[in-house]
Length: 426
Image (cartoon, rainbow, N blue to C red; front, side):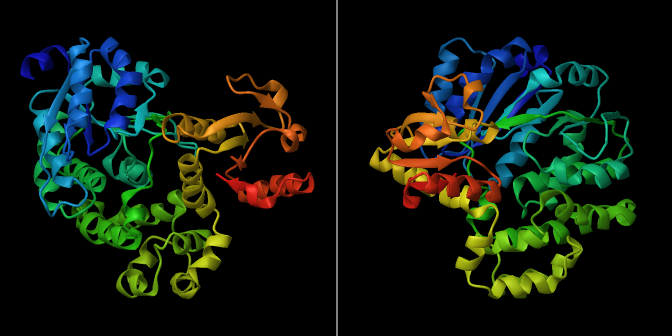
């Protein structure tokens, strides 16, 4: 790997586990672009089978010498692959000037910011954070590390959002070891900020969309394991509170950033957490004391919702129908090889079509529709909303994120004669 690193100063590091289809999609769509920029791609894999290795070897055999494969056996007690990420970062820093830690379901949008990025690489910045900010904060160079924590801690925890120099990764290693009990992205981010307080590193921020999700995006591990509250209590106690004392006056701002920027600990967030099963009385008794540090919403509100029947929260949640029930319904339709009309062709609808193409391949999309149907150019048959009742379908999926608008569209369809049981939210 050392010889390649002499030519290529930056590597894309992709830790993965049992996601061969995801990795194949990623490499198929991005390898040519990475090759053009002379970026190496390191697949760091701990899969329980050889599928990912075989996929990687396929592209290597096609002549993509930029692609490398490393097998890593996760320790039995490492639930989140945290040690794999730590070890992969340290190893890559021995061979490359820069490491870009990327998720296997998040594809980089290099064309959006490559000119800005390359200038920062040339001027040897140690932390380059790329993420869209809608609060009037423009791209900045030579940031103060305390201001950086205050403004960008929460967005640094997003996959693909930062590039690190070998100089800072070497300094981070002792901190990553200290934080190993945490989720892997948080381990890296806290180690970055801890290191910034100890040495003079150069920090830059680019206000751009850094990535888009692939059709293989899955629900976050913390949601699946129902441990959102535990995770954030851990972030406060192990992470933010243990940052160097130089951060003391801004630590509380970083904590409150969770509520302001993620929505998880807002008034509606309590309902959504209860609907997902991530808010129970048992969890509140164990972690409730930490909530006041991340939200301005009274903690009693979360205790109240932890006692409300989950079915009620599901009906009132803004996200449950789309993130859980919608995917469950698509999976059911796929197994039964049903015909589907998709209504809603915006960015969300386009992502649903891509999911169907790559994940739910047995669903037959007979048509797509939208209120602006005449402006749509698509490989699918495009019909007006008025034509839907007479068209061929088993189910109609309404791909509109806003629950209120979804209900209005659904009501219109029911009035036109479409059975309510054949309509679902996705």
